[in-house]
Image (cartoon, rainbow, N blue to C red; front, side, top):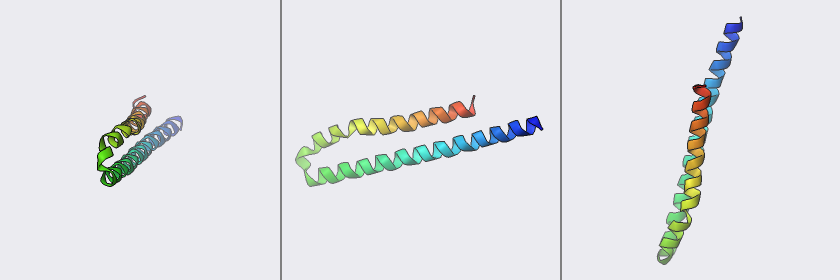
Length: 81
């Protein structure tokens, strides 16, 4: 009985890690897509400011990538504990 509960708990941990990783990656992908669309729109409206616009988007882009990477690491920690 104890082993069955541990197996069920482990299965739920794997399912939660998989679901969490999927949601984090999808969320980061949507955020990066919206950011890229905004940059493309801004550059299309003001081509002279393309360098400033693309320079200002680097920090949010890196932060979104960092969130996705951290989510992957945390899910791997759950699975490989």
